[in-house]
Image 1 (cartoon, rainbow, N blue to C red):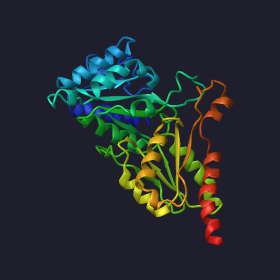
Image 2 (image 1 turned 120 degrees about the vertical axis):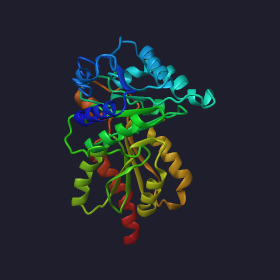
Image 3 (image 1 turned 180 degrees about the horizontal axis):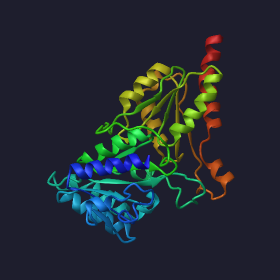
Length: 326
Protein backbone atom coordinates (compact mmCIF):
# COMPACT_ATOMS: atom_id res chain seq x y z
CA UNK A 1 0.00 0.00 0.00
CA UNK A 2 2.88 2.38 0.63
CA UNK A 3 3.69 2.30 -3.08
CA UNK A 4 0.09 3.23 -3.94
CA UNK A 5 0.26 6.19 -1.57
CA UNK A 6 3.60 7.19 -3.08
CA UNK A 7 2.07 7.03 -6.57
CA UNK A 8 -0.76 9.29 -5.44
CA UNK A 9 1.64 11.89 -4.03
CA UNK A 10 3.86 11.69 -7.11
CA UNK A 11 0.99 12.03 -9.58
CA UNK A 12 -0.57 14.96 -7.74
CA UNK A 13 2.77 16.77 -7.34
CA UNK A 14 3.38 16.34 -11.07
CA UNK A 15 -0.14 17.48 -11.92
CA UNK A 16 -0.22 20.52 -9.62
CA UNK A 17 2.91 22.55 -8.75
CA UNK A 18 1.23 23.90 -5.60
CA UNK A 19 1.24 20.43 -3.96
CA UNK A 20 4.06 20.00 -1.44
CA UNK A 21 4.93 17.71 1.47
CA UNK A 22 6.15 18.73 4.93
CA UNK A 23 7.27 16.52 7.78
CA UNK A 24 10.05 14.77 9.63
CA UNK A 25 12.33 12.79 7.29
CA UNK A 26 9.96 13.06 4.30
CA UNK A 27 12.74 14.23 1.98
CA UNK A 28 16.02 12.36 1.63
CA UNK A 29 14.95 9.53 3.96
CA UNK A 30 11.64 9.09 2.12
CA UNK A 31 9.25 9.10 5.07
CA UNK A 32 8.98 6.67 7.96
CA UNK A 33 7.12 4.15 5.73
CA UNK A 34 8.65 5.22 2.38
CA UNK A 35 5.58 7.05 1.06
CA UNK A 36 7.83 9.81 -0.35
CA UNK A 37 10.79 7.58 -1.23
CA UNK A 38 13.16 9.35 -3.70
CA UNK A 39 10.59 12.01 -4.64
CA UNK A 40 13.01 14.75 -3.54
CA UNK A 41 15.16 13.83 -6.57
CA UNK A 42 12.27 14.71 -8.87
CA UNK A 43 10.75 17.70 -7.05
CA UNK A 44 13.56 19.13 -4.96
CA UNK A 45 14.12 19.80 -1.28
CA UNK A 46 11.65 22.69 -1.00
CA UNK A 47 8.60 20.74 -2.19
CA UNK A 48 9.57 17.80 0.04
CA UNK A 49 10.60 19.75 3.07
CA UNK A 50 12.31 18.01 5.98
CA UNK A 51 11.21 19.73 9.18
CA UNK A 52 12.55 19.81 12.74
CA UNK A 53 10.93 17.56 15.35
CA UNK A 54 8.34 20.20 16.22
CA UNK A 55 4.83 19.14 15.20
CA UNK A 56 3.05 22.31 16.26
CA UNK A 57 5.45 24.43 14.18
CA UNK A 58 5.30 22.49 10.91
CA UNK A 59 1.54 21.96 11.23
CA UNK A 60 1.10 25.71 11.60
CA UNK A 61 3.39 26.23 8.61
CA UNK A 62 1.27 23.81 6.56
CA UNK A 63 -1.95 25.60 7.49
CA UNK A 64 -0.44 28.98 6.62
CA UNK A 65 0.80 27.63 3.31
CA UNK A 66 -2.68 26.27 2.53
CA UNK A 67 -4.25 29.65 3.32
CA UNK A 68 -1.94 31.40 0.88
CA UNK A 69 -2.36 29.20 -2.19
CA UNK A 70 -0.45 25.96 -1.72
CA UNK A 71 -1.84 22.44 -1.23
CA UNK A 72 0.35 21.00 1.52
CA UNK A 73 0.45 17.42 2.72
CA UNK A 74 1.64 17.29 6.31
CA UNK A 75 2.98 13.91 7.40
CA UNK A 76 3.07 12.86 11.01
CA UNK A 77 5.86 10.33 11.50
CA UNK A 78 3.38 8.67 13.85
CA UNK A 79 -0.17 9.97 14.19
CA UNK A 80 0.21 9.97 17.96
CA UNK A 81 2.80 12.75 17.63
CA UNK A 82 0.15 15.01 16.10
CA UNK A 83 -1.39 15.49 19.52
CA UNK A 84 1.38 18.08 19.87
CA UNK A 85 -0.26 19.96 16.98
CA UNK A 86 -3.84 19.60 18.24
CA UNK A 87 -4.19 23.34 18.80
CA UNK A 88 -3.20 24.14 15.21
CA UNK A 89 -5.51 21.46 13.79
CA UNK A 90 -8.54 22.41 15.89
CA UNK A 91 -8.24 26.18 16.26
CA UNK A 92 -6.72 26.91 12.85
CA UNK A 93 -7.21 24.20 10.23
CA UNK A 94 -10.80 23.47 11.15
CA UNK A 95 -11.96 27.02 11.84
CA UNK A 96 -10.17 29.53 9.60
CA UNK A 97 -12.52 29.17 6.64
CA UNK A 98 -15.43 30.02 8.95
CA UNK A 99 -13.79 32.62 11.18
CA UNK A 100 -12.51 34.50 8.11
CA UNK A 101 -16.01 34.66 6.65
CA UNK A 102 -14.96 32.45 3.75
CA UNK A 103 -11.99 34.62 2.78
CA UNK A 104 -9.56 31.72 3.27
CA UNK A 105 -9.67 28.08 2.28
CA UNK A 106 -7.44 25.48 3.92
CA UNK A 107 -6.76 22.74 1.33
CA UNK A 108 -4.63 20.64 3.64
CA UNK A 109 -4.06 16.88 4.00
CA UNK A 110 -2.78 15.62 7.34
CA UNK A 111 -1.67 12.01 6.98
CA UNK A 112 0.52 9.34 8.52
CA UNK A 113 0.70 5.94 10.21
CA UNK A 114 -1.43 5.13 13.23
CA UNK A 115 -3.32 2.34 14.94
CA UNK A 116 -2.12 -0.62 16.95
CA UNK A 117 0.95 -2.15 15.31
CA UNK A 118 2.97 -5.05 16.64
CA UNK A 119 4.41 -4.30 20.04
CA UNK A 120 4.97 -0.60 19.48
CA UNK A 121 3.93 0.34 23.00
CA UNK A 122 1.20 2.65 24.22
CA UNK A 123 2.44 5.97 22.85
CA UNK A 124 2.96 4.58 19.33
CA UNK A 125 -0.35 2.68 19.27
CA UNK A 126 -2.73 5.62 19.39
CA UNK A 127 -6.03 5.80 17.56
CA UNK A 128 -6.73 9.51 17.10
CA UNK A 129 -10.04 9.24 15.24
CA UNK A 130 -11.96 9.90 18.45
CA UNK A 131 -9.76 12.88 19.32
CA UNK A 132 -10.40 14.60 15.98
CA UNK A 133 -14.02 13.67 15.22
CA UNK A 134 -15.44 16.49 17.35
CA UNK A 135 -13.44 19.25 15.62
CA UNK A 136 -15.76 21.32 13.40
CA UNK A 137 -14.57 21.88 9.85
CA UNK A 138 -12.31 18.85 9.29
CA UNK A 139 -13.02 15.63 7.40
CA UNK A 140 -11.79 12.23 8.57
CA UNK A 141 -10.92 9.54 6.02
CA UNK A 142 -9.51 6.04 6.67
CA UNK A 143 -8.07 4.05 3.77
CA UNK A 144 -7.96 0.26 3.89
CA UNK A 145 -6.92 -1.23 0.54
CA UNK A 146 -4.25 -0.55 -2.06
CA UNK A 147 -6.86 0.68 -4.53
CA UNK A 148 -8.76 3.01 -2.22
CA UNK A 149 -5.57 4.29 -0.56
CA UNK A 150 -4.33 5.78 -3.82
CA UNK A 151 -7.71 6.96 -5.10
CA UNK A 152 -8.72 8.53 -1.78
CA UNK A 153 -5.39 10.30 -1.25
CA UNK A 154 -5.58 11.83 -4.73
CA UNK A 155 -9.08 13.09 -3.94
CA UNK A 156 -7.98 14.41 -0.56
CA UNK A 157 -5.12 16.39 -2.11
CA UNK A 158 -7.52 17.97 -4.61
CA UNK A 159 -10.11 18.84 -1.96
CA UNK A 160 -10.44 22.38 -0.63
CA UNK A 161 -11.20 21.06 2.85
CA UNK A 162 -8.74 20.16 5.62
CA UNK A 163 -8.67 16.36 5.71
CA UNK A 164 -7.14 14.02 8.27
CA UNK A 165 -6.15 10.90 6.36
CA UNK A 166 -5.63 7.78 8.48
CA UNK A 167 -3.26 5.05 7.32
CA UNK A 168 -2.87 1.95 9.47
CA UNK A 169 0.67 0.99 10.33
CA UNK A 170 0.01 -2.72 9.61
CA UNK A 171 -1.45 -2.12 6.13
CA UNK A 172 1.55 -0.54 4.39
CA UNK A 173 2.77 -3.89 3.06
CA UNK A 174 -0.52 -5.28 1.76
CA UNK A 175 -0.63 -6.00 -1.99
CA UNK A 176 -3.17 -5.06 -4.63
CA UNK A 177 -3.86 -3.21 -7.87
CA UNK A 178 -4.60 0.44 -8.54
CA UNK A 179 -6.40 2.30 -11.32
CA UNK A 180 -4.30 4.88 -13.07
CA UNK A 181 -5.65 8.39 -12.55
CA UNK A 182 -8.66 7.18 -10.56
CA UNK A 183 -10.07 9.33 -7.76
CA UNK A 184 -12.63 8.12 -5.22
CA UNK A 185 -15.30 9.97 -3.29
CA UNK A 186 -14.15 10.87 0.21
CA UNK A 187 -17.70 10.65 1.57
CA UNK A 188 -18.74 7.19 0.34
CA UNK A 189 -18.49 3.85 2.13
CA UNK A 190 -17.56 0.60 0.37
CA UNK A 191 -19.41 -2.71 0.47
CA UNK A 192 -16.51 -5.04 1.22
CA UNK A 193 -18.78 -8.10 1.27
CA UNK A 194 -22.47 -8.19 0.32
CA UNK A 195 -24.74 -10.18 2.60
CA UNK A 196 -28.17 -10.44 4.18
CA UNK A 197 -28.01 -11.60 7.82
CA UNK A 198 -26.30 -8.74 9.63
CA UNK A 199 -24.56 -5.46 8.76
CA UNK A 200 -20.99 -5.22 10.07
CA UNK A 201 -19.65 -1.66 9.97
CA UNK A 202 -15.88 -1.32 10.18
CA UNK A 203 -12.94 0.65 8.81
CA UNK A 204 -9.17 0.53 8.29
CA UNK A 205 -7.49 -2.71 9.51
CA UNK A 206 -10.72 -3.99 11.06
CA UNK A 207 -11.93 -4.63 7.50
CA UNK A 208 -9.51 -7.56 7.39
CA UNK A 209 -10.33 -8.77 10.90
CA UNK A 210 -14.02 -8.85 9.94
CA UNK A 211 -13.43 -10.53 6.57
CA UNK A 212 -11.33 -13.19 8.32
CA UNK A 213 -14.24 -13.80 10.70
CA UNK A 214 -16.60 -14.03 7.71
CA UNK A 215 -14.67 -17.02 6.36
CA UNK A 216 -15.62 -18.97 9.47
CA UNK A 217 -19.17 -17.60 9.50
CA UNK A 218 -19.75 -18.68 5.90
CA UNK A 219 -18.86 -22.26 6.84
CA UNK A 220 -21.54 -22.14 9.53
CA UNK A 221 -24.22 -20.80 7.20
CA UNK A 222 -24.15 -17.09 8.07
CA UNK A 223 -24.17 -14.38 5.42
CA UNK A 224 -22.97 -11.06 6.89
CA UNK A 225 -22.72 -7.82 4.93
CA UNK A 226 -19.47 -5.93 5.54
CA UNK A 227 -19.44 -2.15 5.07
CA UNK A 228 -16.10 -0.33 5.14
CA UNK A 229 -17.00 3.16 6.38
CA UNK A 230 -13.98 4.97 4.81
CA UNK A 231 -15.48 8.36 5.70
CA UNK A 232 -15.39 8.67 9.49
CA UNK A 233 -16.72 12.22 9.33
CA UNK A 234 -19.21 12.65 7.84
CA UNK A 235 -20.62 9.11 7.84
CA UNK A 236 -22.14 7.84 4.60
CA UNK A 237 -25.57 7.32 6.11
CA UNK A 238 -27.14 6.59 2.73
CA UNK A 239 -25.08 3.41 2.27
CA UNK A 240 -25.33 2.50 5.96
CA UNK A 241 -29.11 2.95 6.04
CA UNK A 242 -29.59 0.86 2.90
CA UNK A 243 -27.65 -2.01 4.45
CA UNK A 244 -29.35 -1.73 7.85
CA UNK A 245 -32.82 -1.77 6.29
CA UNK A 246 -31.87 -4.93 4.43
CA UNK A 247 -30.37 -6.89 7.34
CA UNK A 248 -32.08 -5.21 10.35
CA UNK A 249 -29.06 -6.09 12.53
CA UNK A 250 -25.93 -4.01 13.15
CA UNK A 251 -22.49 -4.76 14.59
CA UNK A 252 -19.86 -2.01 14.68
CA UNK A 253 -16.24 -3.21 14.76
CA UNK A 254 -13.50 -0.68 15.44
CA UNK A 255 -9.96 -0.43 16.75
CA UNK A 256 -10.88 2.85 18.44
CA UNK A 257 -11.56 2.98 22.17
CA UNK A 258 -15.06 2.06 23.29
CA UNK A 259 -15.62 5.27 25.28
CA UNK A 260 -16.20 8.24 22.98
CA UNK A 261 -15.01 6.39 19.89
CA UNK A 262 -16.19 6.36 16.29
CA UNK A 263 -18.48 3.43 17.11
CA UNK A 264 -20.15 5.37 19.91
CA UNK A 265 -21.00 8.24 17.57
CA UNK A 266 -22.18 5.93 14.81
CA UNK A 267 -24.27 3.84 17.18
CA UNK A 268 -26.00 6.97 18.45
CA UNK A 269 -26.86 8.12 14.91
CA UNK A 270 -28.18 4.68 13.93
CA UNK A 271 -30.36 4.53 17.04
CA UNK A 272 -31.66 8.04 16.41
CA UNK A 273 -32.40 7.65 12.69
CA UNK A 274 -32.90 3.92 12.03
CA UNK A 275 -34.37 2.64 15.29
CA UNK A 276 -37.59 1.37 13.66
CA UNK A 277 -35.53 -0.61 11.13
CA UNK A 278 -33.67 -2.60 13.80
CA UNK A 279 -34.67 -6.02 15.13
CA UNK A 280 -31.81 -6.09 17.65
CA UNK A 281 -29.83 -3.54 19.62
CA UNK A 282 -26.67 -2.20 17.99
CA UNK A 283 -23.63 -4.18 19.15
CA UNK A 284 -20.21 -2.51 19.41
CA UNK A 285 -16.88 -4.32 19.42
CA UNK A 286 -14.14 -1.86 20.36
CA UNK A 287 -10.70 -1.74 21.92
CA UNK A 288 -10.40 -1.84 25.68
CA UNK A 289 -10.22 1.50 27.48
CA UNK A 290 -6.62 0.93 28.58
CA UNK A 291 -3.21 2.00 27.26
CA UNK A 292 -2.04 -0.56 24.72
CA UNK A 293 0.42 -2.99 26.28
CA UNK A 294 3.82 -3.82 24.80
CA UNK A 295 3.56 -7.55 25.60
CA UNK A 296 2.13 -9.38 22.58
CA UNK A 297 -0.53 -11.37 24.46
CA UNK A 298 -1.73 -8.32 26.39
CA UNK A 299 -1.72 -6.15 23.26
CA UNK A 300 -3.89 -8.72 21.45
CA UNK A 301 -6.28 -8.81 24.41
CA UNK A 302 -6.95 -5.07 24.12
CA UNK A 303 -8.14 -5.07 20.48
CA UNK A 304 -10.93 -6.89 18.63
CA UNK A 305 -10.09 -10.38 17.33
CA UNK A 306 -11.92 -12.41 14.61
CA UNK A 307 -13.32 -14.82 17.22
CA UNK A 308 -15.15 -11.95 18.91
CA UNK A 309 -16.74 -10.96 15.60
CA UNK A 310 -17.88 -14.56 15.02
CA UNK A 311 -19.43 -14.70 18.49
CA UNK A 312 -21.19 -11.36 18.03
CA UNK A 313 -22.71 -12.38 14.69
CA UNK A 314 -23.98 -15.65 16.18
CA UNK A 315 -25.47 -13.74 19.09
CA UNK A 316 -27.18 -11.12 16.92
CA UNK A 317 -28.17 -13.09 13.81
CA UNK A 318 -28.70 -16.28 15.81
CA UNK A 319 -31.42 -14.62 17.89
CA UNK A 320 -33.30 -13.83 14.69
CA UNK A 321 -33.05 -17.44 13.55
CA UNK A 322 -34.46 -18.64 16.85
CA UNK A 323 -37.43 -16.30 16.46
CA UNK A 324 -38.09 -17.56 12.94
CA UNK A 325 -37.84 -21.16 14.10
CA UNK A 326 -40.26 -20.51 16.95
